Figure 1 (cartoon, one colour):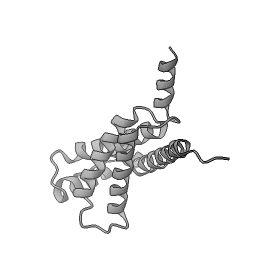
Figure 2: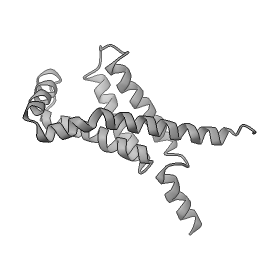
Figure 3: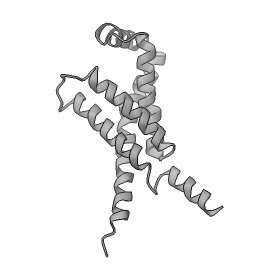
Figure 4: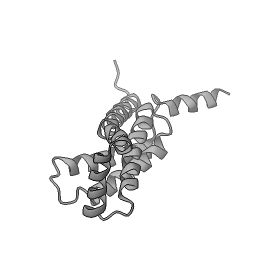
Length: 144
């Protein structure tokens, strides 16, 4: 079998989307649900985002950040509206890196957020690739 650079790149974009989408959903899903349902979790985010990070409206900001992670992860995983979702994820992860994780151990949280930001930037530039729903939508449009 002959090596095809374009096919390899498309497969790599698929792997990046699956990994990034999965990790974003796994890191945010329970927090989104808990912010809505758990007063204890809301207090945690109010203290962390408000008192430690000095964000205005800390619970709203936490919900927006975790919501972007969760919804962005779902869209990226599916390859649907990949570029807009990846822009929001990249911005969220950059803010997380520069606020919550700056000066942290880059092997743990800071390493995750900067890596997620970089993977999202790859998707901003290249889109979902041929194996995402964006690619299917593009192909259907081309045949009409």
